[in-house]
Amino acid sequence: MDIETSVVRLPGAPVEVQFAHLSYQEFLAADFLCTAWTETAKDSDWLIACAGLSWWSACGAMEARGGGFRRLGLPCRDSREGELARSQVLLMLVELLPDSGELFEALSQDPDAQLRIGQHAHITYGASMIKVSKTRAVRVAALKSNSAVVVPKAACWKSAIAVPRGAVYLPEHGVGVLLLAAARAGSVQVVRGLAARGLHLGFVDGNDNTALHLCLLHEHEECVLELLRQGDGDHPLKRNVAWCTPGKLAAQSAVALPAAFRALNPSPGDKDACAIRKPLMVAARAGDVDAVRSLVASEALEDAVATPRHCTALSVAAENGRAEVVRVLAEHKADVNCRSSAKKSPALFWASYYMHDETIAASLAAGAVINAADSNGFTALHAASFVGSLAICRRLLAAHAYVHCKTTRASSAGAKGTMPLHVAAGNGHAAVARELLGARANPDGRAAWPGDFTAVHCACLSYGEAAGEIVRALVEGRANLNAIASLPLHFSPLQSAALFNNAVVTEALLQARADASIRRTGVHMIHATARDVAERWDRCDVLAVFDHFDGQA
Image (cartoon, rainbow, N blue to C red):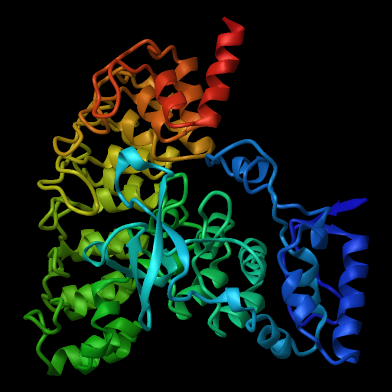
């Protein structure tokens, strides 16, 4: 019998490790392997050979293509059960061993554990909307310290592109299965042991999730930080079948994983850490109020350019949540609206972005301009909507933040004309979206370029129950469920949900009686309904929803 559990402390294990399933048979198998490993010649060939076999965890099989991914509210490629296992027995073995270093050394000897020149792999199409969940075959042409040069299959050297190693996808096998199992379970010891010994971090499961994706999906912050220390990171090409990069997943879980969000989205002060040497700025960053009081009387406030990204003592204090330091500096006439980063973002923006509620209150009390925007037009309310902080959103709205503020130009963070409601809807923050709608945000407001999309279109990029809740909130706000956007492919929200294989949004839209018969001329198909889109791109989850509603008709 399987015993469902969340955290298990195995006998003799130094730390707690999280398992999705635990059976007595699996524990006995791990205990036997522990004895065999420590009392024999520690032959590693058999261990490497079976590291990814499903036999090791028949009870805890990974539903990579089925229910496991779907339980998180994310789309998967098809409805088949996963063919690979979580290697739970090997995870238990690591926990049982008093010293697992030799085990990691043995596993790292697997010749398939590292990326090799000439190897065939896959990369995604990045931000291409019409290539959602698709990958292209490449071969590895050259390897550098942290990057790889890949060439599309049957292409010449002129087509070679350099990408981070972690963006070169290999299907999970062998020791790669163990790495992904450790990422799901939150076993920092295993993640550190394998990554530190050069294991390729681009192994992916059936839904193109790397170890970093899985740590974020299952909210294992320490594992995320460990992978970042080992050289992994965010990149536009690192997308799963839900079109989510690690950075997007971090934004969706920013409240739950603040340290991971900060590590993936460093502040100007973090980037300029080596340049912050002056005593006042060092004290402001550390929150040493007494030192700041002493220094501010004898030094200049350093509101002039002090670092490459224009950080000042007050901006560094704001981004690190040093509310009392902000008050002291403001009392001595420091510029509370100072700007840092290449985008010239005001200090209030960074306080909102990193969810420092008390610092926001101190800044507003000192006269910070609440609707001050960076060079792209993003305000503090945009930042609060991006990270999903309901408390900060309420504080800003109470201070008369402009709910209809729009970005002034397109950037990597959003299209021109993006409003806070678009940001909240696109990142799955249902509570913030409701708060904005309650403040009379326009549910049909459009981002001008590129896309001309509404908040309902943006909801197609968020997943899980929050996505359905966002659609229902927009329906209550009388949003137009049949608005046509120019991207992707002149689609309605229902067609967009079908393209992104978002079954939750599809179901919510059909329940709200969105028009499923809308046809528009697109780049790749003529007069395609939402069902046609799902069939053309093999969106199995969405097709199942359409079949369900057709059966009820």
